[in-house]
Length: 604
Image (cartoon, rainbow, N blue to C red):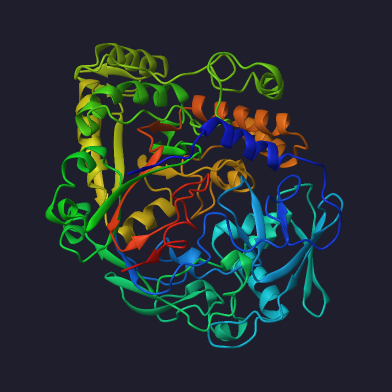
């Protein structure tokens, strides 16, 4: 079953027209806030448009996760944590709608108010807000959470905190953030930080938490049971304080959300086939087309769906660590991209069924245009022309091979680029002028069997140009430890991007974060042009400037040759037990955190 959106073009155009409609919202308490203009839903909205306000409560969803975990605190740098926990445990002032580019509505906050230029923002806490242990959420909890996360929390929280000039209580249940930087997005980011219970962490080193402490939060679910490395069970809190908050009506309907962990993708798929798992996402189109014919599918007990979305493709592929001397030269990275025979690999892995990612925001109105930069994009990039990688302004496109295994044209171009960078083949081995061999270690997670198959094919191509490569497969803990320390030459990389890129782009690609241990700038991008484009998109006051800034950033990153892109997933392939249901209306973000299992329900 395919779930379409209707007119893709109309939906995206309407979303962008809405988000940029109007001017600056007047400085008075509001039920919600949008990046530009007003949020789409009125103050008296009953529920989100993609939620079923009458959904029944009960049942369970069990998903298969590949890997392991050794911590239950998703808010710190250390430890390997199930990625879903920060969405389940992190109740915040506001919640994000998946049907608008960037709009927030009150959850813990009953209202939000901003200064005329968003130089400050105030949130008023709902009087009834409570933690799962029954204690009230207080302003003291709020202020402690922001300061703690902003100083010793995960790096994702540090950038925002550095832009807060002051945080003060200005009413019985109201706090005000005043910012030290011109940045329209900060008022929204302030509403998305998790609020934790201060008393739980008295006398405890917050940054060193492991499975010994389960965070107490004000969210609809609580961690009910777990076994490190094997499973985590989250139970719906029947006494959840916010069940009648409009943003929460019709959501979190399942009594249990259970995450089962397996050593690899094969074991996870077998668990789904025999019913130990009742919902799965399939990322391999060949397996989707050929292996989902087992008895439960044939009988209708398992339902297959394809869920379309209107998000950017993001970037999936293999990131090159520019901190390493032999990968710092863009010509070397270009040679490695030419050696990657995508067309042959795609045919081998998917039967050429999945298109290649062409840029970071491809599949969206924010993606870079082909050919030379024009208009505002060219204007924004021209001051950096002397330092940009060639073809950034002129126009860059990924190489396309003839699909044959030998990839002669790509191999020849790879030799040419390596030679330009000072590397030549000597006695069958790629070496520099001092006789040093070019060696490449490619780091992968233990459960990523599909990526391992892709790299096997790539290593054969590398051998043809005299490069000695090795694939290192690490368990989840080792993989995180090594990526946190940037201890790799090349690594599997996946970065989801939205229709409303903002401050998180500094974390992904900003120079200041390039060497931040545990940070998300895996490639080590240090580009003044990228920094400037991120700054522009954060301060743009018109749709044209915002879109141009993102398109320009897309050019800088794509032409920078930091990642070898593979194929994109413009639909989600989901299979689930027939009892698991969701509304027919699909938000523009599609299958995204906040949709499954949030608006799903169980129906016998």
